[in-house]
Length: 446
Image (tube, rainbow, N blue to C red):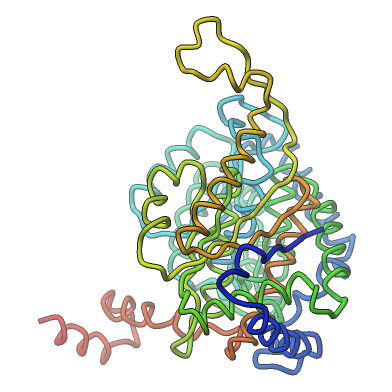
């Protein structure tokens, strides 16, 4: 379902070098498929599309139906990193762009918290909650990660104060460790329904676990179709060859990085619904590859809007980047440009054309301009932006990430650098047990 076109890079890379990197990517592919590389205890995501049990989806739908019976119209999903980005990217991609303004009531609105420490954001979230019928999903392996723990403490208190402690137990669902951790302990004490974060799936690969499935189901989308699309992609990527899309993508991006010094990859979309898909992708590749002094920096733009802001830099700035365009070949809606009698805007030459026709020419024109300007460009394409194709894209980038990181020579599944800021933050907040670190950091700041 997912196709990769690397022709926009061939003028920069050369076929001999590309063939060399195809061989490297195929060796990395073998490592990922065999499951004997670094981080191989976190490969549980590889077969989620085909092995997700029907009863898991049914259990998520049971929560949806219970909350619908209670009139819930606002679900607060609490999590950070992979505990929210996957669900948010799917919900944003599949939602009507103006669903809030149109006041669609088929499913509750899902909002996200626990991904920042902004006092204004949390205060305004509580303002919203005060006007709505609320339930919450809290997602945390441990239950002690600061950002979601702070948000959950506030939301939990609001729900208990508003609906009573007994009713709160039916309005809070936890997705957490099966056996241990603060959130698991609290869930047992309070009687919350729980779903399990699999031990062998890291957060950034967790969108097809309950971490993503439950919020997506609650938002009213067809998770079975997402899984079907992902399963088709899993099957397609199981065929080892130089034409395997994941191998092609991993080979070219590593060639551009290692041989040509292209250290920034810009994900480009021409559909604003894919903005949060790019945010999900940035975490996936940034955390997976950015280590050991290596890595391609993942960035993103949404065109054509960003052609009027970042376009100048991409066209003529420092030549350290390449682009990966997410191309959606067919729109799911149709809007035709009409004729205007006065033609003051000079656009009558477009009369009778679809807006999509203009968009495709803008995409092609930009591709040619950027390649001429020294920016290699790959294309990752799907037929249309629907649940099945979105599932295919999610699985493609997960699988390709494993291949690419092994090609680069790093462990795709750890993130040792994530803990550095937390240690400093805990020391500055004078958390018990951090007394020596607190003293040291205060001395450093004098």
